[in-house]
Figure 1 (cartoon, rainbow, N blue to C red):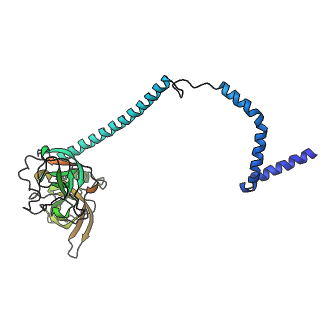
Figure 2 (tube, rainbow, N blue to C red):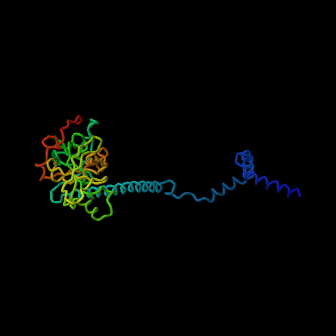
Figure 3 (cartoon, rainbow, N blue to C red):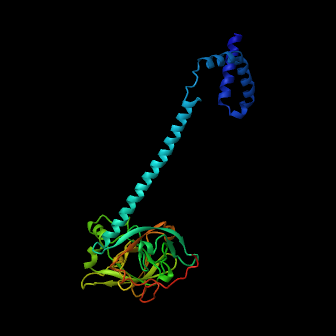
Length: 334
């Protein structure tokens, strides 16, 4: 009877300890641990000795010591090194593939014009923070001339090379700089920026080949850089046909260069940017804000487009001879 009572008391106690919060049973932790250690201490040493006895000693080369282990460790280091080199090779392969794709896109824009393209690394920007003038590692040794057009991703217009051009360094004035002057552009309905192209096959075709839209009504604008990375200007209609509704500018539509008087033929129809905002004044005229599809300050590489046919006809950057020609800038950096 006494044993049954003790069993009941023990069961009730264990049940209460199981359901009570830990703070009520914390005082029992140390005595119980001491009791368990006291009971297991006599057999702990023999068990540990038996485990050490039956445990196999590490084989040389697998956590052991000796020449074989050193050779295995060296092979492991070599394998890790080759993995890094392989990853770098894959990254370089992808970079070259992207570069080839960009160059092909630039050539496809004006396939009838002989244009030589090559990449140039961006090595810095103008010391004056009020100017976005950028310097690239390419100069007269590579055939760069004043007025050479610079693009990003093959078809996105960045700007032109300024005079003078040193042997291995050139300065590029972006079209978004205040000193670059007015820019004449064309806007084709359905020529939408990437990510905004609809599923319409006609719009898809116009987005990839703007020449399809040349026959119908289109829009034009004279854009002026605002100094914050955008360009603004009023829109007017070209090729308007009686009985047909005039096209209107829409947010997301691409804006392309069409400025024959100041830019070489090889630069025509390059992408200036996409319409970011459209406003209409009291007279019904549309006023657009255009922003390039890239951030000039984040570019690490540009593509220079050299055209032998347009070299003589290109307006010298900074000469001030025609509208839209940039004003010369004196750099304070070497």
